[in-house]
Image 1 (tube, rainbow, N blue to C red):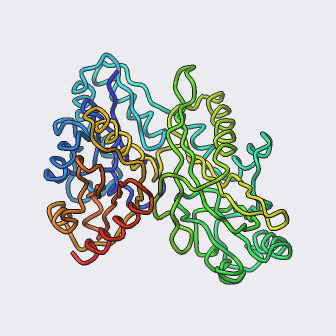
Image 2 (tube, rainbow, N blue to C red; image 1 turned 120 degrees about the vertical axis):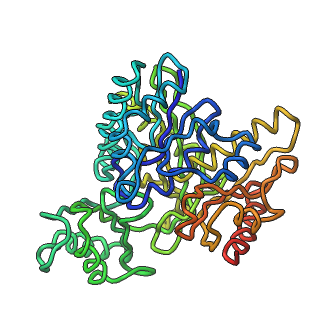
Length: 428
Protein backbone atom coordinates (compact mmCIF):
# COMPACT_ATOMS: atom_id res chain seq x y z
CA UNK A 1 0.00 0.00 0.00
CA UNK A 2 1.31 3.46 -0.91
CA UNK A 3 1.02 6.43 1.41
CA UNK A 4 0.10 10.02 0.61
CA UNK A 5 0.87 12.52 3.32
CA UNK A 6 -0.51 16.05 3.54
CA UNK A 7 0.48 18.07 6.55
CA UNK A 8 -2.01 20.87 5.92
CA UNK A 9 -4.67 20.46 8.55
CA UNK A 10 -7.54 20.30 6.03
CA UNK A 11 -10.26 21.92 8.12
CA UNK A 12 -7.82 23.05 10.83
CA UNK A 13 -8.71 26.49 12.20
CA UNK A 14 -5.23 27.82 12.87
CA UNK A 15 -4.42 30.67 10.47
CA UNK A 16 -1.35 30.36 8.28
CA UNK A 17 -0.97 26.62 8.81
CA UNK A 18 -0.11 26.08 5.14
CA UNK A 19 3.36 27.52 5.66
CA UNK A 20 4.16 24.63 8.02
CA UNK A 21 3.24 22.03 5.39
CA UNK A 22 6.84 21.07 4.67
CA UNK A 23 7.07 19.41 8.08
CA UNK A 24 5.32 16.44 6.45
CA UNK A 25 8.55 15.75 4.54
CA UNK A 26 10.08 14.52 7.81
CA UNK A 27 7.34 11.89 8.20
CA UNK A 28 7.53 10.61 4.63
CA UNK A 29 9.53 7.69 3.34
CA UNK A 30 11.15 7.56 -0.08
CA UNK A 31 8.08 5.97 -1.64
CA UNK A 32 5.52 8.33 -0.08
CA UNK A 33 3.88 11.33 -1.74
CA UNK A 34 3.68 14.68 0.09
CA UNK A 35 1.29 17.52 -0.81
CA UNK A 36 2.55 21.06 -0.16
CA UNK A 37 1.12 24.48 -1.12
CA UNK A 38 4.23 25.71 -2.96
CA UNK A 39 7.51 24.32 -4.34
CA UNK A 40 10.10 23.30 -1.75
CA UNK A 41 13.59 24.81 -1.73
CA UNK A 42 15.69 22.40 -3.85
CA UNK A 43 18.72 22.78 -1.57
CA UNK A 44 16.62 21.79 1.43
CA UNK A 45 15.45 18.68 -0.42
CA UNK A 46 19.06 17.80 -1.23
CA UNK A 47 19.95 18.20 2.44
CA UNK A 48 17.14 15.86 3.54
CA UNK A 49 17.99 13.32 0.84
CA UNK A 50 21.62 13.18 1.96
CA UNK A 51 20.35 12.16 5.40
CA UNK A 52 17.96 9.57 3.98
CA UNK A 53 14.89 11.65 4.84
CA UNK A 54 11.82 12.61 2.82
CA UNK A 55 10.26 11.38 -0.44
CA UNK A 56 11.70 11.43 -3.92
CA UNK A 57 11.50 14.95 -5.42
CA UNK A 58 9.04 13.78 -8.09
CA UNK A 59 6.71 12.64 -5.29
CA UNK A 60 6.22 16.17 -3.96
CA UNK A 61 2.87 17.47 -5.21
CA UNK A 62 2.02 21.17 -5.59
CA UNK A 63 -1.53 21.94 -6.76
CA UNK A 64 -2.15 24.61 -9.37
CA UNK A 65 -2.80 28.11 -8.16
CA UNK A 66 -1.62 31.65 -8.63
CA UNK A 67 -2.67 35.07 -7.48
CA UNK A 68 -5.49 34.88 -4.95
CA UNK A 69 -6.08 31.18 -5.56
CA UNK A 70 -2.57 30.47 -4.26
CA UNK A 71 -3.65 31.84 -0.88
CA UNK A 72 -6.59 29.47 -0.58
CA UNK A 73 -6.31 26.53 1.85
CA UNK A 74 -4.50 23.52 0.43
CA UNK A 75 -7.64 21.39 0.72
CA UNK A 76 -9.60 23.71 -1.57
CA UNK A 77 -6.79 23.87 -4.11
CA UNK A 78 -6.48 20.09 -4.20
CA UNK A 79 -10.21 19.62 -4.66
CA UNK A 80 -10.16 22.12 -7.53
CA UNK A 81 -7.23 20.33 -9.16
CA UNK A 82 -8.27 16.64 -9.24
CA UNK A 83 -5.69 15.81 -11.89
CA UNK A 84 -2.83 16.38 -9.46
CA UNK A 85 -4.44 13.97 -7.00
CA UNK A 86 -4.79 11.29 -9.65
CA UNK A 87 -1.15 11.70 -10.63
CA UNK A 88 -0.14 11.44 -6.99
CA UNK A 89 -2.08 8.20 -6.55
CA UNK A 90 -0.59 6.69 -9.70
CA UNK A 91 2.92 7.86 -8.74
CA UNK A 92 2.80 5.60 -5.70
CA UNK A 93 2.51 2.58 -7.95
CA UNK A 94 0.41 0.79 -5.34
CA UNK A 95 -2.78 -1.23 -5.60
CA UNK A 96 -4.23 0.84 -2.75
CA UNK A 97 -3.44 4.29 -1.33
CA UNK A 98 -3.57 5.40 2.30
CA UNK A 99 -3.91 9.13 3.03
CA UNK A 100 -2.16 9.98 6.30
CA UNK A 101 -3.31 13.55 7.03
CA UNK A 102 -2.37 16.04 9.70
CA UNK A 103 -5.89 15.46 11.02
CA UNK A 104 -8.80 13.44 9.68
CA UNK A 105 -11.56 15.84 8.58
CA UNK A 106 -14.52 15.77 6.17
CA UNK A 107 -12.34 17.62 3.65
CA UNK A 108 -9.85 14.74 3.71
CA UNK A 109 -12.64 12.27 2.99
CA UNK A 110 -13.76 14.42 0.09
CA UNK A 111 -10.21 14.39 -1.28
CA UNK A 112 -10.08 10.61 -0.97
CA UNK A 113 -13.31 10.25 -2.95
CA UNK A 114 -12.00 12.50 -5.73
CA UNK A 115 -8.70 10.60 -5.88
CA UNK A 116 -10.40 7.22 -5.99
CA UNK A 117 -12.87 8.26 -8.68
CA UNK A 118 -10.28 9.88 -10.94
CA UNK A 119 -7.40 7.42 -10.47
CA UNK A 120 -9.35 4.16 -10.27
CA UNK A 121 -7.22 3.18 -7.26
CA UNK A 122 -8.86 2.41 -3.88
CA UNK A 123 -8.07 5.19 -1.40
CA UNK A 124 -8.40 4.94 2.39
CA UNK A 125 -8.02 7.63 5.05
CA UNK A 126 -6.15 7.08 8.30
CA UNK A 127 -8.43 8.38 11.04
CA UNK A 128 -12.06 9.24 11.74
CA UNK A 129 -13.39 12.79 11.20
CA UNK A 130 -16.19 12.14 13.70
CA UNK A 131 -13.90 11.02 16.51
CA UNK A 132 -11.30 13.63 15.59
CA UNK A 133 -13.93 16.35 15.97
CA UNK A 134 -15.14 14.83 19.26
CA UNK A 135 -11.67 14.41 20.76
CA UNK A 136 -10.72 17.97 19.77
CA UNK A 137 -13.34 19.26 22.23
CA UNK A 138 -11.53 19.53 25.56
CA UNK A 139 -14.65 19.38 27.72
CA UNK A 140 -15.85 16.16 26.07
CA UNK A 141 -12.52 14.39 26.57
CA UNK A 142 -12.34 15.69 30.14
CA UNK A 143 -15.72 14.04 30.81
CA UNK A 144 -14.61 10.80 29.12
CA UNK A 145 -11.40 10.77 31.18
CA UNK A 146 -13.37 11.19 34.42
CA UNK A 147 -15.67 8.34 33.33
CA UNK A 148 -12.61 6.10 32.84
CA UNK A 149 -11.09 7.10 36.17
CA UNK A 150 -8.27 9.20 34.68
CA UNK A 151 -7.38 12.19 36.89
CA UNK A 152 -8.06 15.71 35.61
CA UNK A 153 -7.70 19.15 37.20
CA UNK A 154 -10.35 20.32 39.64
CA UNK A 155 -12.69 22.58 37.75
CA UNK A 156 -15.87 23.03 35.77
CA UNK A 157 -17.25 23.83 32.32
CA UNK A 158 -18.59 27.33 31.69
CA UNK A 159 -20.85 27.81 28.67
CA UNK A 160 -21.73 31.12 27.04
CA UNK A 161 -24.79 31.75 24.90
CA UNK A 162 -22.47 32.75 22.03
CA UNK A 163 -18.73 33.43 21.54
CA UNK A 164 -17.49 36.74 22.90
CA UNK A 165 -19.88 39.34 24.28
CA UNK A 166 -20.34 43.08 24.56
CA UNK A 167 -22.16 43.26 27.88
CA UNK A 168 -21.11 42.15 31.34
CA UNK A 169 -23.91 39.60 31.58
CA UNK A 170 -22.85 37.97 28.31
CA UNK A 171 -19.74 36.65 30.07
CA UNK A 172 -21.29 36.03 33.50
CA UNK A 173 -21.04 32.20 33.40
CA UNK A 174 -17.26 32.43 32.90
CA UNK A 175 -16.87 35.21 35.48
CA UNK A 176 -18.80 33.23 38.10
CA UNK A 177 -16.78 30.06 37.43
CA UNK A 178 -13.48 31.97 37.73
CA UNK A 179 -14.48 33.50 41.05
CA UNK A 180 -15.55 30.13 42.45
CA UNK A 181 -12.19 28.59 41.55
CA UNK A 182 -10.11 31.54 42.73
CA UNK A 183 -11.55 31.23 46.24
CA UNK A 184 -10.04 27.75 46.49
CA UNK A 185 -6.71 28.02 44.67
CA UNK A 186 -5.77 31.67 43.99
CA UNK A 187 -4.84 30.73 40.40
CA UNK A 188 -7.08 29.63 37.57
CA UNK A 189 -6.35 28.40 34.07
CA UNK A 190 -9.03 29.14 31.50
CA UNK A 191 -9.06 27.21 28.20
CA UNK A 192 -11.40 27.41 25.24
CA UNK A 193 -12.54 23.88 24.41
CA UNK A 194 -11.22 24.20 20.85
CA UNK A 195 -7.85 25.58 19.80
CA UNK A 196 -4.40 23.99 19.56
CA UNK A 197 -0.98 24.85 20.98
CA UNK A 198 -2.34 27.02 23.77
CA UNK A 199 -3.99 29.46 21.36
CA UNK A 200 -7.04 29.88 23.61
CA UNK A 201 -5.45 29.61 27.06
CA UNK A 202 -5.52 32.29 29.77
CA UNK A 203 -4.27 32.45 33.36
CA UNK A 204 -6.05 34.38 36.12
CA UNK A 205 -4.08 35.21 39.25
CA UNK A 206 -0.36 35.07 40.02
CA UNK A 207 1.68 35.15 36.81
CA UNK A 208 -1.36 35.99 34.71
CA UNK A 209 -4.05 38.66 34.51
CA UNK A 210 -6.93 39.67 36.72
CA UNK A 211 -10.45 38.47 35.99
CA UNK A 212 -11.46 41.69 34.25
CA UNK A 213 -8.47 41.56 31.90
CA UNK A 214 -9.12 37.98 30.85
CA UNK A 215 -12.83 38.60 30.35
CA UNK A 216 -11.99 41.58 28.16
CA UNK A 217 -9.83 39.33 25.97
CA UNK A 218 -12.51 36.64 25.76
CA UNK A 219 -15.08 39.26 24.80
CA UNK A 220 -13.10 40.09 21.66
CA UNK A 221 -12.77 36.46 20.50
CA UNK A 222 -15.14 34.50 18.29
CA UNK A 223 -13.56 31.02 18.46
CA UNK A 224 -15.13 29.58 21.62
CA UNK A 225 -18.30 29.78 23.62
CA UNK A 226 -17.41 26.92 26.00
CA UNK A 227 -14.48 27.18 28.42
CA UNK A 228 -12.81 24.91 30.94
CA UNK A 229 -12.22 26.80 34.18
CA UNK A 230 -9.77 24.79 36.29
CA UNK A 231 -7.51 25.13 39.30
CA UNK A 232 -3.96 25.75 38.12
CA UNK A 233 -1.30 23.52 39.63
CA UNK A 234 2.45 24.26 39.80
CA UNK A 235 3.64 22.00 37.00
CA UNK A 236 7.04 20.35 37.28
CA UNK A 237 6.82 19.08 33.68
CA UNK A 238 4.20 18.76 30.93
CA UNK A 239 4.72 15.53 28.95
CA UNK A 240 3.05 14.56 25.69
CA UNK A 241 2.45 10.83 25.24
CA UNK A 242 2.02 9.79 21.61
CA UNK A 243 0.23 6.58 20.67
CA UNK A 244 -0.27 5.08 17.20
CA UNK A 245 -3.67 3.43 16.89
CA UNK A 246 -3.55 0.77 14.14
CA UNK A 247 -6.42 0.51 11.66
CA UNK A 248 -6.55 -3.26 12.31
CA UNK A 249 -6.65 -5.19 15.58
CA UNK A 250 -2.91 -4.88 16.17
CA UNK A 251 -1.53 -3.59 19.48
CA UNK A 252 -1.29 0.11 20.26
CA UNK A 253 2.20 1.43 19.52
CA UNK A 254 4.03 3.87 21.80
CA UNK A 255 5.63 6.52 19.57
CA UNK A 256 7.38 8.43 22.36
CA UNK A 257 7.04 10.65 25.41
CA UNK A 258 8.40 14.19 25.12
CA UNK A 259 8.35 17.12 27.53
CA UNK A 260 6.61 20.15 26.08
CA UNK A 261 8.34 23.51 26.13
CA UNK A 262 6.12 26.52 26.82
CA UNK A 263 6.56 30.21 26.10
CA UNK A 264 4.91 33.10 27.92
CA UNK A 265 1.16 32.83 27.66
CA UNK A 266 1.39 29.02 27.76
CA UNK A 267 1.74 28.62 24.00
CA UNK A 268 3.60 25.59 22.71
CA UNK A 269 7.27 26.37 21.98
CA UNK A 270 8.77 22.95 21.26
CA UNK A 271 9.55 19.54 22.74
CA UNK A 272 12.38 17.77 24.58
CA UNK A 273 13.48 14.15 24.90
CA UNK A 274 13.97 12.22 27.11
CA UNK A 275 11.14 13.16 29.45
CA UNK A 276 12.06 14.15 32.98
CA UNK A 277 8.63 13.11 34.31
CA UNK A 278 8.55 10.60 37.15
CA UNK A 279 5.00 9.39 36.54
CA UNK A 280 5.36 8.33 32.88
CA UNK A 281 4.22 4.77 33.56
CA UNK A 282 0.86 5.99 34.88
CA UNK A 283 0.51 8.50 32.03
CA UNK A 284 1.16 5.78 29.45
CA UNK A 285 -1.50 3.57 31.02
CA UNK A 286 -4.07 6.39 31.00
CA UNK A 287 -3.19 7.30 27.41
CA UNK A 288 -3.75 3.70 26.36
CA UNK A 289 -7.12 3.62 28.10
CA UNK A 290 -8.31 6.63 26.11
CA UNK A 291 -6.70 5.38 22.89
CA UNK A 292 -8.49 2.04 23.32
CA UNK A 293 -11.81 3.84 23.71
CA UNK A 294 -11.09 5.97 20.63
CA UNK A 295 -10.31 2.84 18.60
CA UNK A 296 -13.60 1.28 19.75
CA UNK A 297 -15.32 4.34 18.23
CA UNK A 298 -13.59 3.90 14.86
CA UNK A 299 -10.44 6.02 15.29
CA UNK A 300 -7.08 5.04 13.81
CA UNK A 301 -3.85 6.97 13.43
CA UNK A 302 -1.68 9.09 15.66
CA UNK A 303 -3.02 10.60 18.88
CA UNK A 304 -1.21 12.65 21.51
CA UNK A 305 -2.11 13.03 25.18
CA UNK A 306 -0.95 16.10 27.09
CA UNK A 307 -0.37 15.59 30.81
CA UNK A 308 0.78 17.81 33.66
CA UNK A 309 2.97 16.44 36.44
CA UNK A 310 2.97 18.45 39.66
CA UNK A 311 3.83 18.18 43.33
CA UNK A 312 0.85 17.80 45.64
CA UNK A 313 1.01 20.59 48.24
CA UNK A 314 -0.65 18.44 50.88
CA UNK A 315 1.41 15.26 50.55
CA UNK A 316 4.55 16.45 48.77
CA UNK A 317 4.23 13.56 46.33
CA UNK A 318 4.21 13.77 42.56
CA UNK A 319 0.87 13.48 40.80
CA UNK A 320 -0.28 13.81 37.20
CA UNK A 321 -3.45 14.95 35.45
CA UNK A 322 -4.65 14.80 31.84
CA UNK A 323 -4.77 18.23 30.18
CA UNK A 324 -6.04 17.48 26.67
CA UNK A 325 -6.03 15.09 23.72
CA UNK A 326 -4.56 15.80 20.24
CA UNK A 327 -6.26 13.46 17.71
CA UNK A 328 -3.69 14.25 15.02
CA UNK A 329 -0.04 14.94 14.34
CA UNK A 330 1.39 17.43 16.85
CA UNK A 331 4.57 19.40 17.43
CA UNK A 332 6.40 16.49 19.03
CA UNK A 333 5.74 14.16 16.09
CA UNK A 334 8.36 15.65 13.76
CA UNK A 335 11.46 15.53 16.01
CA UNK A 336 10.46 12.06 17.19
CA UNK A 337 10.23 10.86 13.58
CA UNK A 338 13.54 12.49 12.60
CA UNK A 339 15.36 11.01 15.56
CA UNK A 340 13.94 7.53 14.91
CA UNK A 341 14.91 7.56 11.22
CA UNK A 342 18.39 8.95 11.78
CA UNK A 343 19.05 6.53 14.63
CA UNK A 344 17.88 3.58 12.53
CA UNK A 345 20.32 4.59 9.79
CA UNK A 346 23.09 5.08 12.36
CA UNK A 347 22.47 1.64 13.87
CA UNK A 348 22.73 -0.01 10.44
CA UNK A 349 26.03 1.71 9.70
CA UNK A 350 27.53 1.45 13.19
CA UNK A 351 27.59 5.22 13.72
CA UNK A 352 26.64 7.05 16.97
CA UNK A 353 22.97 7.49 17.74
CA UNK A 354 21.28 10.52 19.33
CA UNK A 355 19.29 9.64 22.46
CA UNK A 356 18.12 13.23 23.11
CA UNK A 357 16.71 16.27 21.34
CA UNK A 358 15.33 19.77 21.88
CA UNK A 359 13.03 21.27 19.25
CA UNK A 360 11.34 24.61 18.64
CA UNK A 361 10.90 27.56 16.30
CA UNK A 362 13.33 30.49 16.27
CA UNK A 363 13.31 33.93 14.70
CA UNK A 364 15.63 34.57 11.75
CA UNK A 365 16.24 37.00 8.91
CA UNK A 366 17.43 34.18 6.64
CA UNK A 367 14.94 33.78 3.79
CA UNK A 368 16.20 30.59 2.14
CA UNK A 369 17.81 27.33 3.16
CA UNK A 370 21.25 28.29 1.83
CA UNK A 371 21.39 31.20 4.29
CA UNK A 372 20.06 29.03 7.11
CA UNK A 373 22.74 26.43 6.40
CA UNK A 374 25.46 29.07 6.27
CA UNK A 375 24.29 30.58 9.56
CA UNK A 376 24.21 27.24 11.40
CA UNK A 377 27.61 26.26 9.95
CA UNK A 378 29.43 23.47 11.76
CA UNK A 379 26.49 23.01 14.14
CA UNK A 380 24.49 21.36 11.32
CA UNK A 381 23.67 17.71 11.98
CA UNK A 382 26.56 15.39 11.18
CA UNK A 383 25.68 11.68 10.81
CA UNK A 384 29.24 10.68 11.68
CA UNK A 385 28.94 12.43 15.07
CA UNK A 386 25.25 11.70 15.60
CA UNK A 387 24.71 15.25 16.83
CA UNK A 388 23.80 18.65 15.45
CA UNK A 389 20.99 20.87 14.20
CA UNK A 390 18.41 19.85 11.62
CA UNK A 391 16.27 22.74 10.27
CA UNK A 392 12.82 22.03 8.88
CA UNK A 393 9.56 23.75 7.81
CA UNK A 394 11.50 26.10 5.54
CA UNK A 395 8.17 27.45 4.28
CA UNK A 396 8.19 29.57 7.44
CA UNK A 397 11.34 31.46 6.41
CA UNK A 398 9.29 34.00 4.46
CA UNK A 399 7.65 34.82 7.80
CA UNK A 400 10.93 35.16 9.70
CA UNK A 401 10.69 31.79 11.45
CA UNK A 402 12.69 28.56 11.27
CA UNK A 403 11.82 25.28 12.99
CA UNK A 404 14.85 23.34 14.21
CA UNK A 405 15.64 20.20 16.18
CA UNK A 406 18.91 19.79 18.04
CA UNK A 407 19.99 16.14 18.42
CA UNK A 408 22.68 15.12 20.90
CA UNK A 409 23.85 12.59 23.46
CA UNK A 410 22.01 14.28 26.31
CA UNK A 411 19.19 16.76 26.75
CA UNK A 412 21.61 19.24 28.32
CA UNK A 413 23.92 19.08 25.29
CA UNK A 414 20.91 19.31 22.92
CA UNK A 415 19.77 22.45 24.75
CA UNK A 416 23.26 23.96 24.35
CA UNK A 417 23.22 23.24 20.62
CA UNK A 418 19.72 24.66 20.28
CA UNK A 419 20.72 27.89 22.04
CA UNK A 420 23.83 28.29 19.91
CA UNK A 421 21.88 27.73 16.68
CA UNK A 422 19.17 30.12 17.80
CA UNK A 423 21.74 32.87 18.38
CA UNK A 424 23.28 32.30 14.93
CA UNK A 425 19.93 32.28 13.14
CA UNK A 426 18.71 35.41 14.89
CA UNK A 427 21.87 37.20 13.78
CA UNK A 428 21.75 35.85 10.21
